[in-house]
Image (cartoon, rainbow over all chains, first blue to last red; front, side, top):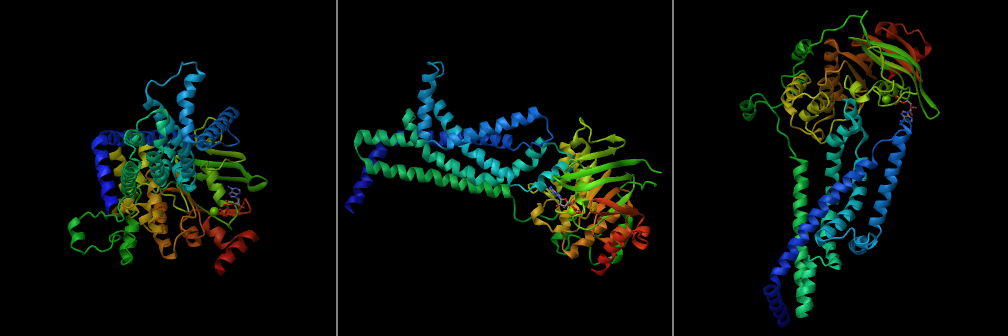
Length: 291
Length: 246
Ligand SMILES: Nc1ncnc2c1ncn2[C@@H]1O[C@H](COP(=O)(O)OP(=O)(O)O)[C@@H](O)[C@H]1O
Ligand SMILES: [Mg+2]
């Protein structure tokens, strides 16, 4: 019991003394993770869409060359940023860019560097997810869209991407949660996110474990809220499980006498004569051409 | 004589070394209801898909009002907007409601305003008996209902010709009737239609012209009476008799 109350009072002490820096750490972590996930998704969608531009053997050679080049470049980007640790990417970009450009390109603001690194990293993962999301959509959807005269871009924006987006929300959520946690490596370029607050607190007080408890609880809270919001978004996008029938006369439906939606249409199974009659009346407004 | 909307000339299509369509020739005139029958694998779907450029023919011409749509410089999407297609597997947009399915093409392709598109969509949804379901998503309705919506979606684009690729083959038997009813009403209203079907009663009673395809060529064609009552070729007789047996 003693240990527990010691821990409790240590935590209270830390919160009292460093509460502000923990809080601003939480804020910075959330802003960085959220923004970088968003930008990363944009990068991912861009790469995914570019990679799935259809390319037939009959297309002109210039177009085919550029599409092939594009695919190679995107492939290289994905492999490099997925295949190296983010902590090294941060060092590479933050210290490397000024180094090789002789100070021409440098980061005056650590936010810019951190956002750049995390976004590009997320983009590499999302590029693969989006590509998978697009090619997993039933080709019939594309054919349906083409058949009513949509262009490739219209088909993508109206039919394929909305469905691909819905299917990859779980991956977006994964990336967001990973970003909340993994932005902790940004201390390497002195970005003061949530984990940096821990380093500052233990540097001054040596209370490693109590601060670690605060960190664990803090990260868990952030990721739980993120999971919850993503589930909510998924449910919202799926829409209602049921649909309302739209009747001309709402009262009739409410009274329960309207019990079959096909009633009064040619598909009303119960009235064969009525069906015949309506079939006669059905007129699509065209006169039959002579032959 | 009506004016031909589509003229297919010497059309051939090969997938690799597999020659699927060989030198196909025929015309579609305004008001025609042409049924295309034939064993599976004989190239019926490929023919329809070539006609609306979902497949690129290997050689030959497709003339739309006298203009070759295979010529370079012809925009396939603009041409497809005039040639509707109804698929065996419906292909309704899963991310949209029934009503949105029938509106999106009008808004994005024909640039109609929303209200106009909605009214036009409703007109056809009422005709196919799907007006009560406008708020449903495709996954929430039956196969027969999906196909009726697909027909309304195609019709809402005011196409000149409507292509049907086995529209009832994926349906449970009790739903075939409702779709055929809609197609029959369409045919009777003067719509120009090209229908690949295994429903011999439909081909016989509704169409103005029947085409029998066998192994990538048009084996025999003529009026329904000619083809069903007096088939000239042995292949046609064999095909029809197989159908009568079951
Ligand atoms: N995309 C494709 N690639 C290769 N072969 C195909 C393709 N589509 C169809 N085929 C072939 O073309 C032939 C005709 O197919 P299809 O037009 O679907 O026939 P039907 O609709 O009459 O049953 C079949 O032998 C089929 O294997
Ligand atoms: Mg077929």
